[in-house]
Length: 151
Length: 151
Image (cartoon, each protein chain N blue to C red):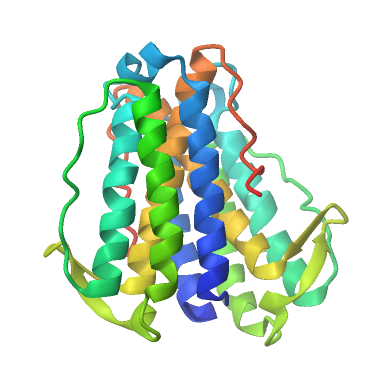
C-alpha cells in the first residue's frame, strides 16, 4: 500500500500543517480559548508532542516511557519543542526494525495494537484535534491554513 | 507498512465512527447548525460521500466521474446513502489492480497524486471535518462518540 518512507512523509506533512495552525493562533488564544468546554489548542499541541516521539521510541525499542511534559508558557516554547520533535522523528524513523509494523505490542502498558495501527492512530488523533483547532480559529475570525497544503 | 486489506479496515472503521457522529446530531442541527461561518455537518457528510465511491471508481478504472449528488432532506436519507456506500466500498476494494497504489494519476482531472496518497487524502479529509463536527456537538451540549472506538 505504501512504504515506511512514504508514511513518514505523510506524517511530517501533517505535522507541518499542525505547526502552521499553532502559529495562526494569537498567543493568548492558543492558551485560553476553547468552545463547548473542550481543551485549548496549546493543550492539544502538547498532547501531540506527548504522543509522537514517545510512541516512536516504543515502536523502535519496545520500551514504553511516557513523555515528561515540559512546562510551556508561550507559543514560541511550543514551536521550539515542535521543531525538536520533527528532527528527532526524522532521525529515529529509519531505525524501526524491519517487520516491526506488523507486530502486536501493548503500547504504554495499555493499548494492545498492531504497530502500523498505533502509528496511524498517532497521526489520525492529530488530524482529528487539529480539525477542532480550525473551528476555534474560524470562530475567532482567523483564516486557517489550507488543509490540502502539506508539501 | 500495511496491506490494502488493513487500509480498508481502517477506512471503514473511520466511516463507522463518522456514521455515529451523523446519528448524534439532532435532525435539524445536522442541516442548519454551524460555527464561524463553516458548513453544517450534513454538507460535510455529503462531501465525504461525494469523495469515497467516486474516488475508488477512479482508482479502479482510471475513469474520474464526479458524484451526482442526490438531494437529501433528512438524517435518514444521509444514513441510507452512507450504508449503500459502505457496501459498495467493500465490494469494489478487492478489485483494485495490484501495483495501482504506487501509480500516479490525475484524479478528477485536477489532482495529480500517487494513488495511495489520494486514498489517504480521502480518509484524512473525513477525519479533519469530523473533528469539526465534534466541536459542533460539544457546543450543542451533546457528547460525541469516543474517537478511539473504531472496531
